[in-house]
Length: 131
Image 1 (cartoon, rainbow, N blue to C red):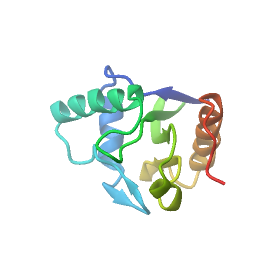
Image 2 (image 1 turned 90 degrees about the vertical axis):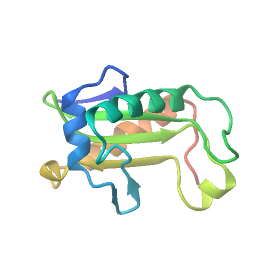
Image 3 (image 1 turned 60 degrees about the vertical axis):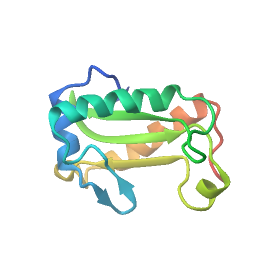
Image 4 (image 1 turned 120 degrees about the vertical axis):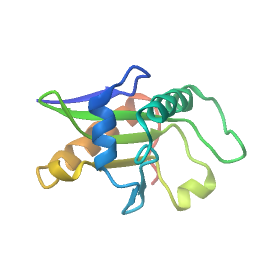
């Protein structure tokens, strides 16, 4: 069974472990949690939660985004983020959605399902995907 869960500041060791398995940068995906200590990860969760609650553009470029975890049979296998809107620069290079699957779970269709679920989340947020 697949389940998409929104990031929570209470997320624990299972998410932390998965994020350590996904490279810090791969195919354009940036995983800023890779390499953090567990305490740094808990602080990172707080920042990511704030990112989802932000309104407007911060620091001239940063748009709000919400992070989600993909669980398969209760095990986190990947993550994705949905930007709430795009700047002109993000329309050219960036887009609304980014996602990654932990290496041990690749090649099983999880990426395709994660993208489908993230597209649904973007639609529910009322966000339009770049044309």
